[in-house]
Length: 260
Image 1 (tube, one colour):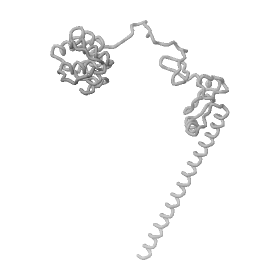
Image 2: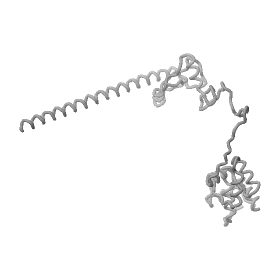
Image 3: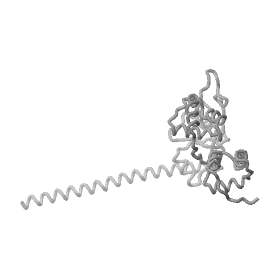
Image 4: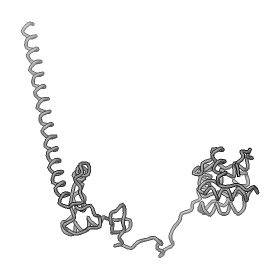
C-alpha cells in the first residue's frame, strides 16, 4: 500500500508526539489506529514522524488543560512519577509517561516528596552478601563490604606481600584475569603499565611480560635521571647568566663613578 502524505490535525500531531517516546513504530501505529480509527503501518509511521520532525527519543511538550494541571497538582504530593502517570491515564486521554510527569513537576515547581525506602528489616532483592564474586570489565572482583568491591588479584597479592603501594596495581603476567596462580601475579606502577601497553610489552607470555616490565622500569628510571640532570644544567646556566649580569652591572657602575 503506497503512503499518501496528508495533512494531520493538531490533535493527531500532539498524540504522535506524546506517544512516540520509548515505543516501537509498530506500537505507535497500533495506538494511533485505536485512537483515530485509521489503519496505518509501522512503515508509514516512520515516514510520518520524519516528515513532522518528531524523534522517538525526544519528549515533546504537551499542552495541558486547566483541569489536567489542577489534577496533577492535587495528586502529586507523596506519590512517585509512575503512580502519578497511572492515575492521570485512568482519568484523562491520551495518557502521559513518567518522564512527562517529571518534566511537568520541574516546570511547575512541584516537589512530590516521594522517597523510596525499604521498611525496617527488609533487604533489597538484588543485595549481594559479603564475599560474593563478580566479573566487571573482565576482572574478578570480591565484595568486601556494602558498596566496596576489590580486585581478587590484588587481594591474593596482599595476602602474600602486604599492602599494595600507592600508584601501583597487580596484573596477571599472562593477561588472563582468571589465572590467579601466585607466580602469575605481577606488581607494576601505573607509569610502568602505561609504558608496557604503549610499546607492546604486555604479552600473553609471562616471561615476555616480565622482561617488558624490567625494560619499563629502566626506561622510567633513565627518564627521571635525565629530567633531574636537565633541571641541574638549566639551573647552572641560569646561575652563570645571572653572575655575568651582576658583573656587567658592577663594572658599568664602577666606570660611571670614575667618569664622575
